[in-house]
Length: 388
Ligand SMILES: *Cc1c(COP(=O)(O)O)cnc(C)c1O
Image 1 (cartoon, rainbow, N blue to C red):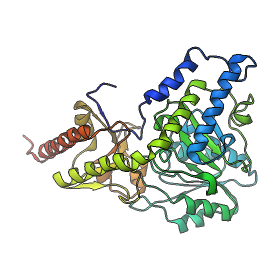
Image 2 (tube, rainbow, N blue to C red):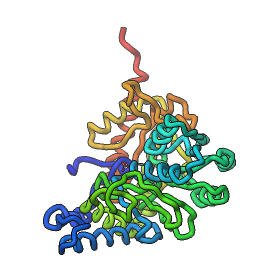
Image 3 (cartoon, rainbow, N blue to C red):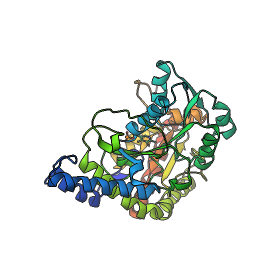
Image 4 (cartoon, rainbow, N blue to C red):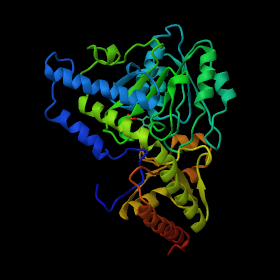
């Protein structure tokens, strides 16, 4: 990565850790055999895959054979919902939330087109769920409830223990998209009645295109991809060996860095917000400030178009992302901010900054000089009289 870039977009993807890359390299070069092969290569590669299962399991507090490697967060999310519905043939209803990643929301939409029903539970202005409302959404014909552990845009954390207990008492499958939570907060699945949990490599300093699905050993399961016997028959297709090995290493490293996320990275994020709000008027935090991931800052710079800020920041080498998307040509406020009942104006002035392992105090100093200058300038421009 060029040194003149300040990367504050770690919730969209992260840099591969050099130690992760180093463990991957032999499997891209000399250790190229198929892990199912019955020659020396096979045994070597299989051993590496087994170690990756152990490392990811250690991070989550589960058994190695409860980990199924996939092509990423999206496939893990799709597989969990697919499996739950397949294993509940008389139940055609799913429950999820308005702030899920599109890997869950659009899958539910596809299910509805295939004749299922979906209830999308709303959130409040802080991004929180009303658990009573979630409970009311669960019906006798509900097959699965899917609630993310932490939101990718605002960082808001959901009460997983309570939701899991609720699903258990109702006798429905429970899936959590933990892509943003893994590596940023301690997770122990030993005492948590979750059936499925999704994670993704590239949000965790491993490669893109690899992820994992935790499948509770007691959960009845039906694969999405059918073919060979890989991953204990739960995900067919020759294993993506280098990426799986890298994800294992990244999981091992994450176990060691969770504390850092919650001290050093949290301190960077907090200083970032405190300074910006002291230097600039009308900067608001989106999402419950007290119930968020330690690395995420979703800020509204009221009265300024976030796209204009993003463009200026990019010119100055600062990478962050919009609280809105322009998928259809027109700028649409993000579904997450819309679900939180923020005004369109506030959503369109919102940017997400997500910090990580490689961000430094020196970078923060630079950013805290750049952003106030850019925002002040844009506010001046928009307040300036228009020439006839
Ligand atoms: C990034 C992300 C995904 C998708 O993961 P991929 O590996 O990119 O498919 C799913 N859920 C959340 C919350 C994410 O942040």
